[in-house]
Length: 231
Image (tube, rainbow, N blue to C red; front, side, top):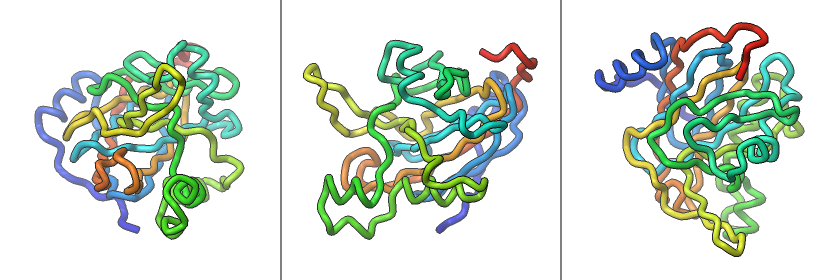
Protein backbone atom coordinates (compact mmCIF):
# COMPACT_ATOMS: atom_id res chain seq x y z
CA UNK A 1 0.00 0.00 0.00
CA UNK A 2 1.30 3.46 -0.85
CA UNK A 3 2.74 5.28 2.15
CA UNK A 4 1.78 8.85 3.08
CA UNK A 5 3.96 11.52 1.47
CA UNK A 6 4.53 15.22 1.96
CA UNK A 7 3.54 17.84 -0.57
CA UNK A 8 3.87 21.63 -0.53
CA UNK A 9 1.02 23.50 1.16
CA UNK A 10 -0.19 26.58 -0.74
CA UNK A 11 1.18 29.67 0.98
CA UNK A 12 -2.23 31.20 1.59
CA UNK A 13 -3.56 28.01 3.25
CA UNK A 14 -0.46 27.61 5.40
CA UNK A 15 -0.68 31.24 6.54
CA UNK A 16 -4.39 30.93 7.33
CA UNK A 17 -3.92 27.74 9.36
CA UNK A 18 -0.99 29.26 11.26
CA UNK A 19 -2.99 32.38 12.11
CA UNK A 20 -5.92 30.34 13.43
CA UNK A 21 -4.32 27.24 14.90
CA UNK A 22 -0.65 28.00 15.52
CA UNK A 23 2.53 26.60 13.98
CA UNK A 24 2.39 23.52 11.77
CA UNK A 25 3.83 20.43 13.46
CA UNK A 26 3.21 17.68 10.90
CA UNK A 27 1.85 17.38 7.39
CA UNK A 28 1.30 14.33 5.19
CA UNK A 29 -0.64 13.56 2.05
CA UNK A 30 -2.48 10.25 2.32
CA UNK A 31 -2.67 8.39 -0.97
CA UNK A 32 -5.98 7.10 -2.33
CA UNK A 33 -7.09 3.90 -0.53
CA UNK A 34 -4.49 4.32 2.25
CA UNK A 35 -4.76 4.51 6.07
CA UNK A 36 -3.16 7.04 8.44
CA UNK A 37 -3.07 7.70 12.16
CA UNK A 38 -1.54 9.90 14.83
CA UNK A 39 -1.86 10.84 18.48
CA UNK A 40 -3.03 14.43 18.97
CA UNK A 41 -2.16 16.13 22.23
CA UNK A 42 -4.82 18.19 23.99
CA UNK A 43 -5.24 21.51 22.20
CA UNK A 44 -3.61 20.44 18.95
CA UNK A 45 -5.63 20.82 15.76
CA UNK A 46 -5.90 18.33 12.90
CA UNK A 47 -6.94 19.81 9.55
CA UNK A 48 -8.13 17.30 6.93
CA UNK A 49 -8.00 18.62 3.37
CA UNK A 50 -9.99 17.16 0.48
CA UNK A 51 -7.13 17.69 -1.98
CA UNK A 52 -8.77 16.76 -5.28
CA UNK A 53 -12.45 17.07 -4.32
CA UNK A 54 -15.35 14.67 -3.69
CA UNK A 55 -13.31 12.34 -1.47
CA UNK A 56 -14.78 10.73 1.66
CA UNK A 57 -12.40 10.36 4.62
CA UNK A 58 -13.49 7.72 7.15
CA UNK A 59 -12.40 8.46 10.71
CA UNK A 60 -12.14 6.88 14.18
CA UNK A 61 -11.05 8.56 17.43
CA UNK A 62 -10.17 7.20 20.87
CA UNK A 63 -9.05 8.62 24.21
CA UNK A 64 -5.32 7.97 23.95
CA UNK A 65 -5.04 7.19 27.68
CA UNK A 66 -7.94 4.70 27.62
CA UNK A 67 -8.92 3.46 24.17
CA UNK A 68 -12.05 1.82 25.64
CA UNK A 69 -13.35 5.39 25.64
CA UNK A 70 -13.98 5.61 21.91
CA UNK A 71 -16.04 7.83 19.62
CA UNK A 72 -19.74 7.12 19.98
CA UNK A 73 -22.16 8.22 17.27
CA UNK A 74 -25.04 7.80 19.72
CA UNK A 75 -23.52 10.02 22.43
CA UNK A 76 -22.41 12.60 19.87
CA UNK A 77 -25.79 12.88 18.17
CA UNK A 78 -27.65 12.90 21.46
CA UNK A 79 -25.47 15.76 22.66
CA UNK A 80 -26.13 17.97 19.64
CA UNK A 81 -29.61 16.91 18.43
CA UNK A 82 -28.42 16.54 14.83
CA UNK A 83 -27.33 13.61 12.66
CA UNK A 84 -24.69 15.75 10.90
CA UNK A 85 -21.43 17.23 12.11
CA UNK A 86 -20.85 20.92 11.45
CA UNK A 87 -18.94 23.86 12.92
CA UNK A 88 -18.99 23.60 16.72
CA UNK A 89 -19.91 19.91 16.86
CA UNK A 90 -18.26 17.94 19.66
CA UNK A 91 -17.30 14.33 19.03
CA UNK A 92 -18.02 12.45 22.25
CA UNK A 93 -16.96 9.08 23.62
CA UNK A 94 -19.20 6.27 24.83
CA UNK A 95 -18.82 7.87 28.27
CA UNK A 96 -19.97 11.22 26.81
CA UNK A 97 -16.48 12.70 27.27
CA UNK A 98 -15.51 15.31 24.65
CA UNK A 99 -12.80 14.00 22.34
CA UNK A 100 -12.66 16.51 19.46
CA UNK A 101 -14.40 19.75 18.51
CA UNK A 102 -15.00 20.88 14.93
CA UNK A 103 -13.35 24.31 15.03
CA UNK A 104 -13.55 25.02 11.30
CA UNK A 105 -15.16 23.54 8.20
CA UNK A 106 -15.50 24.62 4.59
CA UNK A 107 -18.28 22.08 4.07
CA UNK A 108 -21.76 22.61 5.53
CA UNK A 109 -22.11 19.14 7.04
CA UNK A 110 -20.36 15.80 7.48
CA UNK A 111 -21.83 12.29 7.77
CA UNK A 112 -22.19 10.17 10.91
CA UNK A 113 -24.53 7.45 9.59
CA UNK A 114 -23.06 5.89 6.44
CA UNK A 115 -20.58 3.64 8.22
CA UNK A 116 -17.37 2.17 6.81
CA UNK A 117 -17.19 0.05 3.67
CA UNK A 118 -16.00 -3.52 4.04
CA UNK A 119 -15.91 -6.77 2.08
CA UNK A 120 -19.10 -7.79 3.83
CA UNK A 121 -21.04 -4.58 3.23
CA UNK A 122 -19.83 -4.33 -0.37
CA UNK A 123 -21.06 -7.87 -1.04
CA UNK A 124 -24.43 -7.14 0.55
CA UNK A 125 -24.92 -3.88 -1.34
CA UNK A 126 -23.24 -4.45 -4.68
CA UNK A 127 -22.81 -8.19 -5.22
CA UNK A 128 -20.31 -11.00 -4.68
CA UNK A 129 -18.02 -9.73 -7.43
CA UNK A 130 -16.92 -6.95 -5.02
CA UNK A 131 -15.63 -9.36 -2.33
CA UNK A 132 -11.98 -8.88 -3.26
CA UNK A 133 -12.16 -5.09 -3.10
CA UNK A 134 -10.24 -3.29 -0.37
CA UNK A 135 -12.45 -1.50 2.19
CA UNK A 136 -12.20 1.03 5.01
CA UNK A 137 -12.61 -1.78 7.55
CA UNK A 138 -9.35 -3.29 6.23
CA UNK A 139 -7.59 0.06 6.58
CA UNK A 140 -8.87 0.54 10.11
CA UNK A 141 -7.78 -2.93 11.21
CA UNK A 142 -4.32 -2.51 9.69
CA UNK A 143 -3.80 0.83 11.40
CA UNK A 144 -5.31 -0.19 14.74
CA UNK A 145 -2.92 -3.15 14.87
CA UNK A 146 -0.04 -0.68 15.18
CA UNK A 147 -1.45 0.25 18.62
CA UNK A 148 -2.15 -3.29 19.80
CA UNK A 149 -5.84 -3.00 18.92
CA UNK A 150 -8.06 -5.26 16.85
CA UNK A 151 -11.49 -5.85 15.38
CA UNK A 152 -13.26 -5.58 18.72
CA UNK A 153 -11.89 -2.06 19.06
CA UNK A 154 -13.34 -0.81 15.77
CA UNK A 155 -16.30 1.42 16.57
CA UNK A 156 -18.73 3.58 14.63
CA UNK A 157 -17.00 6.10 12.39
CA UNK A 158 -17.36 9.60 10.98
CA UNK A 159 -17.25 10.18 7.22
CA UNK A 160 -15.74 13.61 6.63
CA UNK A 161 -16.97 15.27 3.39
CA UNK A 162 -19.37 12.40 2.63
CA UNK A 163 -22.90 13.39 1.58
CA UNK A 164 -25.58 11.14 3.08
CA UNK A 165 -28.98 12.86 2.91
CA UNK A 166 -31.78 11.62 5.16
CA UNK A 167 -35.19 11.50 3.47
CA UNK A 168 -38.39 12.42 5.34
CA UNK A 169 -39.23 8.72 5.66
CA UNK A 170 -35.83 8.04 7.27
CA UNK A 171 -34.21 6.45 4.21
CA UNK A 172 -30.49 7.14 3.68
CA UNK A 173 -28.74 7.79 0.40
CA UNK A 174 -25.08 8.07 -0.58
CA UNK A 175 -24.81 10.69 -3.28
CA UNK A 176 -22.27 13.02 -4.88
CA UNK A 177 -20.26 14.93 -2.32
CA UNK A 178 -20.71 18.60 -1.46
CA UNK A 179 -16.97 19.16 -1.13
CA UNK A 180 -14.51 20.52 -3.71
CA UNK A 181 -10.73 20.58 -4.22
CA UNK A 182 -8.91 22.22 -1.32
CA UNK A 183 -11.82 22.33 1.13
CA UNK A 184 -11.06 21.24 4.67
CA UNK A 185 -12.32 20.48 8.18
CA UNK A 186 -10.34 21.28 11.36
CA UNK A 187 -10.65 19.38 14.65
CA UNK A 188 -9.29 20.43 18.05
CA UNK A 189 -8.31 17.71 20.52
CA UNK A 190 -10.02 18.20 23.88
CA UNK A 191 -7.75 15.59 25.47
CA UNK A 192 -4.96 13.40 24.15
CA UNK A 193 -6.59 11.32 21.42
CA UNK A 194 -5.67 8.64 18.91
CA UNK A 195 -7.14 9.36 15.48
CA UNK A 196 -7.29 6.73 12.73
CA UNK A 197 -8.11 7.56 9.11
CA UNK A 198 -9.09 5.51 6.08
CA UNK A 199 -8.87 7.48 2.86
CA UNK A 200 -11.93 5.69 1.52
CA UNK A 201 -11.34 3.20 -1.36
CA UNK A 202 -15.03 2.80 -2.25
CA UNK A 203 -15.68 2.69 -6.02
CA UNK A 204 -19.24 1.31 -6.08
CA UNK A 205 -21.10 4.48 -5.05
CA UNK A 206 -20.61 8.23 -5.59
CA UNK A 207 -19.03 9.00 -2.19
CA UNK A 208 -15.64 9.39 -3.93
CA UNK A 209 -16.98 10.28 -7.36
CA UNK A 210 -16.09 6.66 -8.33
CA UNK A 211 -12.42 7.78 -8.34
CA UNK A 212 -10.70 7.75 -4.89
CA UNK A 213 -8.23 10.59 -4.49
CA UNK A 214 -5.81 12.17 -2.01
CA UNK A 215 -6.38 13.63 1.44
CA UNK A 216 -3.99 15.88 3.33
CA UNK A 217 -3.44 15.76 7.10
CA UNK A 218 -2.03 18.86 8.81
CA UNK A 219 -1.37 18.91 12.57
CA UNK A 220 -1.08 22.37 14.14
CA UNK A 221 0.14 23.27 17.62
CA UNK A 222 -3.13 24.90 18.64
CA UNK A 223 -3.46 25.97 22.27
CA UNK A 224 -2.79 23.70 25.21
CA UNK A 225 -5.92 22.64 27.12
CA UNK A 226 -5.29 22.79 30.89
CA UNK A 227 -6.07 19.58 32.76
CA UNK A 228 -9.68 19.53 33.92
CA UNK A 229 -10.71 22.29 31.53
CA UNK A 230 -11.58 20.20 28.49
CA UNK A 231 -14.64 21.24 26.45
